[in-house]
Image (cartoon, rainbow, N blue to C red; front, side, top):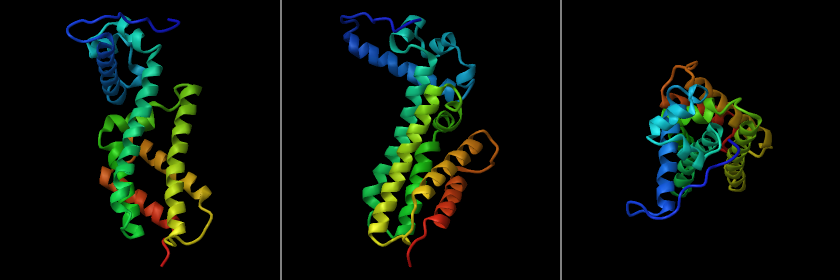
Amino acid sequence: MSGRIAPAAGRYGGRDAGERRAERHQRFLEAGLEMFGARPGYRGTKIADLCKAAGLSSRQFYEEFRTLEDLLAELHLHVNDIAEQAVLDILPAIQDEPPRKRLMLMLRAYVTGAASDPRHARIAYVEIVGVSPRLDRQRLERRAVWIDLLGRQIDEALERGELVPDDYRIARAAFIGAVNGLMHDWVVGWVDASVEEIADELIKIAMGRFRIAD
C-alpha cells in the first residue's frame, strides 16, 4: 500500500466527512492502545485484528494510516504528551513549595501520568523500542524533550539558590536515562514494585544527585 486512500466526502447520518473521519481515527487509536499496550502487543498485532477490534474495515484503516507503525508512532507521542501534561499541570501550584517537596511532587506527577494506565507505560517504554530506525529517532527525540524540561527546572532552581551550584548537564541526561531504564524493567516485570514504590525510588535517585542547598 503506497499511500492512504482518500475518504469519501459529504454528509451522512448528520455528520460531515471530517467528523466521521475523526471518529474513525479515534476508534483506531483506542484499538491500538488496547492491542499494543496490552495483548498481543505491537509485534503480535495484524491489521485485520486491529480493524476487527475497532469495528472498522481495512480500507478505513488505510484512509487514516499507511502502516501499523504509523499508528504506534502516534500513540507513542500521545502517551508522552499525557505524561508531560501531568507535570506541566502541577507546576503552577507547587512553585512556592520547598525544593525537596517540589521535586517529589513533580516526580510523582510524572509517574502517575506515565504509568497510571499500564497500556500507556507499555507503549512508551517497551513496544516502541527497536521497531525501526524511524521510531528509534522519535523515541530519542521525545527523550530529549524530557531532558530539556528537567533542565529548565534545574536552571530555575539554581537561579533561586535552591541547588548546590554544579554542572548538571550530564546528570539530567543520566537521570532521564535511568527513568526510562527503570520504567522499562518495571513494565516487563523484571522489577516487582507498585507505582508508588517506583516513584519513591526515582525520588531517592534524584535527591542523591540534584543536591538541595542548605
